[in-house]
Image 1 (cartoon, one colour):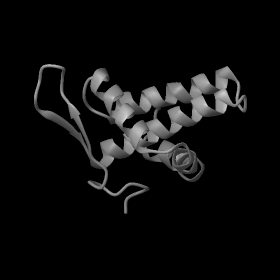
Image 2 (spheres, one colour):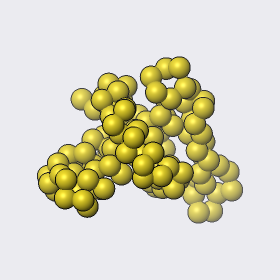
Image 3 (tube, helix red, strand yellow):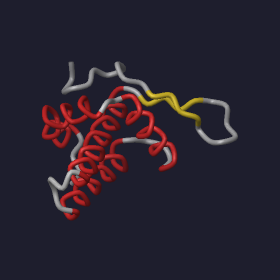
Image 4 (tube, helix red, strand yellow):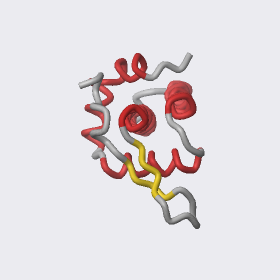
Length: 114
């Protein structure tokens, strides 16, 4: 297993556009990057909502999410947003927070932003 997501284990099927009938598939490293981005973004929003972090900290975490998506996931911004929505809907809050606790540092090593 390479880092925390085995290549090809996690796939996301998304429409390419509103008019296109073909599907966008994210798998392997891109799917892992999407999972990392989702974990960071969802955790940032939930921690902020619970008043456990300040807005500035939330914004930093969301900025990291954007950089991971820009640098490690192909496709249009619309496709990436749809993929994040699919990922968010597949994961429960406890599972996502556990992913963050166990894997946030590994995500940043696996998907560097600088």
